[in-house]
Image (cartoon, rainbow, N blue to C red; front, top):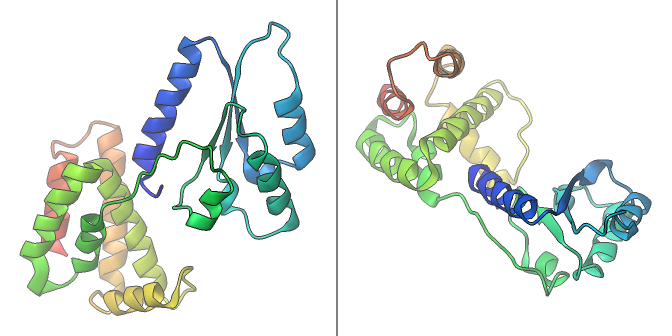
Length: 221
């Protein structure tokens, strides 16, 4: 799923469960793994016959290649194994069909969070933006909203500066249009403000809560 906080929480729960049951846990980053390494990892026996949980990060985010095809084909035949594929994106029906026995957990980001981000910089939509923000904080959490605001600010800076933005054309056009609502100094100032608040919150040197800061930023943009 795309909601990294919820993905992290769900994975932490699985790792905690495995630990409670005395299972060995191994975490693998897909982009650094080869087929031979996975075959060895899933085929080796623990000296004490200990159960093993293998977590593979972002297999489906690999660029299209023969290695990716091999890894997916191999893992699709290992579905009786205790394996978690941890993805940071939504998988298509075609991708999921290769793992018919898998238990799928989906953690999407709420649509209201993106509606809030899209409203930023539009004077006519401030009240609507605040309403969306309250819903997003309730559903996605203030911390994730803050992280997504930082991401949106970086993308708007790229768009404003004529940089290349990854993603489909409609996303690129939307960001370019939204960036026209701001001057470059405004976006740089917002970026600096986010950095400063992040530092202050981590060092407990601010009296303003994260929820309040998000409200204030939304009203100021």
